Amino acid sequence: MINELHEQVKSKMEKSIQVLKKDLARMRAGRANPQILDRITVDYYGVPTPLNQLGNITVPEARLLVISLWDSKMIPAVEREIMKSDLGITPTNDGKVIRLVFPELTEERRKELVKTVKKMGEETKVAIRKIRREANDQLRKMQKNSEITEDDLREEESNVQKITDDYIKKVDELIKEKENEIMEV
Image (cartoon, rainbow, N blue to C red; front, side, top):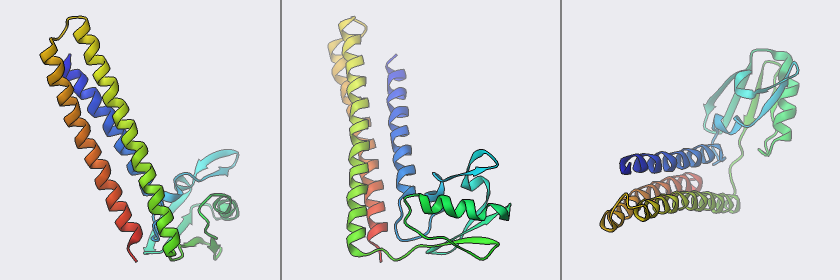
């Protein structure tokens, strides 16, 4: 029963970390990353289709993304969707491929991005602490129903806290890594 609870806690906290990683990967840090296009969908013959399923997305240079569509008739539609998105990048095409050139980030923009990253980290930490609180509530309920003793309760709350601390440390490491990537010129 207790081991099950630990596994549930770890699983939920790991999911929070994965969501954070995904969100951080989507952030533009001055270098091209194909994952920032993951949210963009294009109307492909009446079906909203993710951009990454319409062609190949490559990174030939640090600040350049090249989108090679399998159906070149889709170029105007893809460009329109990129313009509508919150990327703030104007696509260019030569009739065969779409190029997205990422401008250098200004110091001010870098600082804004760092603030956003820290906020995302804080939100993840809040989610992790909520998972800890739910686990502790479950443990107290078990103690109240005489399934575990008071000593077991204290020990298990301590174990849940250790798990929480590990995941909070992982969040801090991810945030620090992303901050360094953003501030790197």
